[in-house]
Length: 357
Image (cartoon, rainbow, N blue to C red; front, top):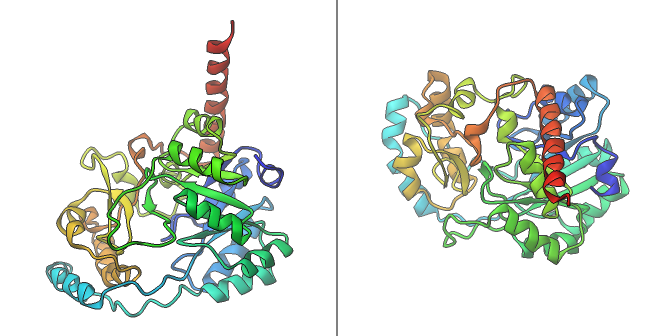
């Protein structure tokens, strides 16, 4: 790990920021106290809501932690395509007895206000999803003593982030659960991506910045593998979803290892942006028709997702999960960090034995 990252945590284990409630302060504090680096997710929260979680985290632990921000998204949606998809979802609105959301009630996720708070009262790390901030923003964070991490899905995005002044990169492979953090969502681009190991190699040859690897990682042996491939740390999201400190819905936690959900897929069905989740009825029926329209589709489906969760219908929920979801282990987050660290040591020892003369 780089010197800056080494100073932040005992182990090269990062708990991913999972927007929507999973990455609550209790989870972040437990990871931090166990020697990892935890992240609060500011996405979908107000600026005041973000700051209250920061205050709660500081009351729970004195260990370093990070905050993740969503970048404002350009207007790429075709209004007619959004309206066609709304008509397709009319049956869902009838089934759940709730109106569809307003696609225009989106805004910029309070980005400017959140940046202002984090510059006024700095935290150790700030990461960014769905794009790269302007150079002056990254320079302001650096001046405040905050390490900045830009999430990238290609070597070109990595080069752009380096040019803008990012302190580190989170390299996201296509195996990752939740939204793919492409900087530009191409409506004609399809639902594809690059595998994590290949992406680490491509980015490592393109830029000389600390790399945090993420995408389908569930075991310490996998962390050891991405470190050997050139990463400085590993970020895990799905692995922490099943922890009792996670704020994920109980049905979401259960679905990770439920035989009913056998695979994941990239889909625009719930948000209009490519995101990996467990394949359920909603994904099968609506995924093929969902347009590239984030956050408009996220707003439209919001009431449906909330009502599905309220009524206990996992077939209508956005069950974000990485490709390794069946390997999820239900245990306290601190114990999981310790187990991952032990598995890393065991994997290193096994390599040393095999390579001994």
